[in-house]
Image (tube, rainbow over all chains, first blue to last red; front, side, top):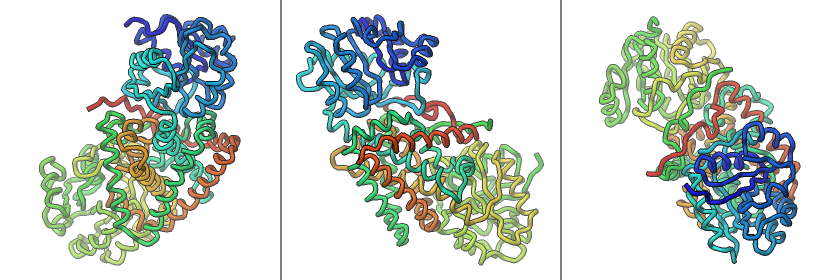
Length: 307
Length: 307
């Protein structure tokens, strides 16, 4: 495939940036890929594993001459990073990001955007519970969705080019409005993560059941929660703080439903429970038919071996 | 391996009974395995797929002459089934069950137990989101835990023999008191299932986000919840109704923690969130080290293909 971009700069070298690098190499999508990370240790690791063609110690050098700059940093520092690089961006370049919240990122980044540079916010709905430069792999985006949120007045050509990059990395692309994005993600991602963190925290905190019991007997359901509750704490702190309203709205709805089910249990209302539990099966079926999960029992995981 | 039992009767032919059958055959653990299911359709399916050496249309015939009878029916009907078979049990036989709640089952079953018949309650902590006779497979119990809850006065030899059967089927066995079992399972299984059902119900019910959006974008976290929320509704209705107190206790603790995290989000208390999210990672690590889950990203599931 012909290169989509001549020079791509990845700012922040964690799971997503690293997967983008390997996916771009797999597809021959970029002439050169430069990288920068704030931590010297991360830059060192990146150099060791061949992540990026060049890793710079100076963020402005990393973005110089790039026609695409991808901000892969926590949502809370997107504005600061944009401010740092603003003076070094080439005319006609496109800046994008991979943050899980879009309204807050657009509000932070836009004020620092120089004339003649495009900003197309983005969000690949892909990830794993592992973090850091070594966690990335080329297949992460295959058949996953990547959402683009072009601001008003964005050049459609800039958006189309970014779409081509994501499609080349294996993703399906959809465009969406920032506020709707933040609500959809509150439902499909942010509320589930907070709930999983909460349940794991409760289990860890009980006095009458030991952690070792929780761990031993986790296969009865609990372990499904622990995967997403092992995700990067900095990233998730920033997500909740910057998508406050939508997350709290969904959690409010969740609490309401949970109370109704608790009451049904207390009152012995089996019909209410049965009907509720029957309805939720259809959603699972839809997810499998849409190719967004495996139908293999227990996600297809084999029995682990004891270490 | 020499047979552990000469004749095993499986009452109720769903996922667990079916997996037990295949696991007993794999290990040569039983001379003969008989089966019974209340629904004629299930009995027909069992005969077609070779599940059980003989499938009987009459429950009393299925248990006659058996030295082990395994009740694999929903928790809510254990007592009724025990009442039906009580007059046909051989002297010296052992009755066990595989229900997810133990106090309520023991209370239901014990009054119908004839003199000279042992009851050792049991609970294999293994399962998948699929139900029915076709869902079973021999490896289901490999390296999973199976809990035995012998009542006071149970012959230790009866318990030891049942332990040998479970170990032969690949499980690790632990003995536990009924009330502690019900509390441990409320944490590791019952509360997580109710929470997953609730979250999936909320997502299905929102007016401003369509089901098709929830399904498309589920890879961002939500899909992990949908697996256990696709479990058998009858089984789960009965679990919540018969482990009411422990489940409501854990849900109360859960709600308390969730409210504290919601307040932290509302007040912008990032440190509280960060500390909470950091603590939960250790539990995940413990589960992987104990061989109760895979460390492969996203449970090792590959990208699905669209249908």
